[in-house]
Length: 329
Image 1 (cartoon, rainbow, N blue to C red):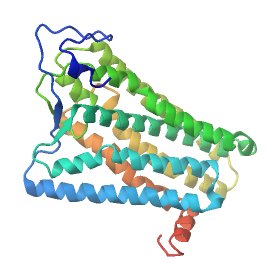
Image 2 (image 1 turned 30 degrees about the vertical axis):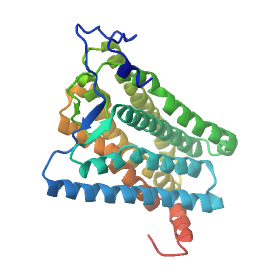
Image 3 (image 1 turned 90 degrees about the horizontal axis):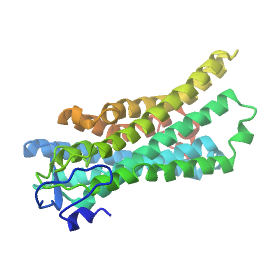
Image 4 (image 1 turned 180 degrees about the vertical axis):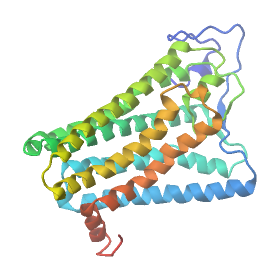
């Protein structure tokens, strides 16, 4: 369906796209402007992004291998964490390789189909991450606020079901708006002043207005961001109340340690995400969009393995065992 607008000169959008008055010559590729600067700075940014990408893949991959090899960690809490690390690897891989290629290229082009495939996977994986962070908060709520019932409630069957729901819903959530946007006519210019194919710049490049499609896109973004964020806040409000009531200082410290790493990741991810997608991206400067996107698309996945490994003794032990007993922490 992505190619529909390449085959037709007149497009009727079911989401109220107005009909153009003249015939369009549709673009077949876009130019991702990225960071236009001199070659030395481009080389520096390429080296920086390549290092961050390699560290992200290595760090998250190490956590997956450590959790896989240690049978003691085959419990819901670490199954969610393993899926989260697996998700982060694909999340950065949906955008960063193309960024790296563009740093070494003079054209910085991306095909029409490639642009919308990147759009789909980037947003689908981001939505899956929002859902998975909410599920991880729910798991911590049950473990701390319902410790006696936790083993019966959060069993292997429910854990697997929640993980599947996150992945399936994540990849279905933005499917309709992405298809609708791909059917809009883009007649030039074809320059996207961004580092990724993002709805804000794409709406700005369209030859016709599509207010309902735009409203749908940002409404779905707001629902998935605000809905999951409020759920996480509610879960941790109950967790905080339960922790403060614990008579043992050791118990409180252990509970805070368990939840601290997850809260740090939530703060990093949602802080930058809300800047971009709670309000229409057309209201932000191009520079602000790029910085915010890089933060949640590259910086957060890079920090995640370090945050979780530094805060968790079990993961530290599993990593040492994986590396043959080396003192890595």
